Image 1 (cartoon, one colour):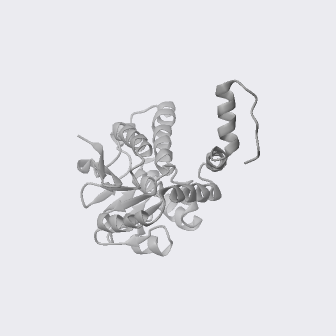
Image 2 (cartoon, rainbow, N blue to C red; image 1 turned 60 degrees about the vertical axis):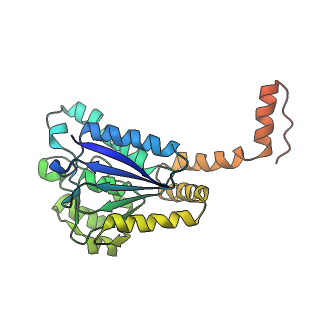
Image 3 (tube, rainbow, N blue to C red; image 1 turned 30 degrees about the vertical axis):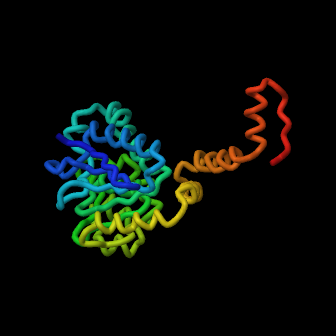
Length: 255
């Protein structure tokens, strides 16, 4: 059965794609499982970081299972398939915890978009990246032309999306898209994740919000989260809540 598994390993969560028979291609059920895991991770304050991995050596993720969307009507394709994947990947991208994609194999289409939704990426030397959607008559639908455009140069993105060229691990690292090329991406990702334990988790969360606000990743929500967190720590906020509960006029001090 194709699944997305969640493993809690001490202070880290590992989200593991487990559909090796189809090169870990996403089914609708896998998207829903990823969505549920993101909710679990966000609610667990003991989790300091997240690693996204996959079963098998050939592919990190080959994209979306054509059986899952091939027979859909244009309306259902846009409404139920594209929007579902987009919403789930957005949720992964906007987790308050830092995320690392450990790509032991090729990442094509939706698989590349999944890796792009993570904060940083580690890649095996022989793995490649591709956006092959045009070869089956569609276009990237889970932010392959949007989020990815902020991470690699426009001409390189056009090479992939228009001309079908693959991006090697070495070139991806040279472009800054990949943080490290390693023979064992999962082990490398775990080593990088250990660095999170040397600093304050709330500082990491706020820094991620600030960076996302700067690059346009859900900017409105990030700005309001930063402002809300600052105001929630004030004496005036505590006084306002107390006054409301006591049915009296608040005495704000500006502190």
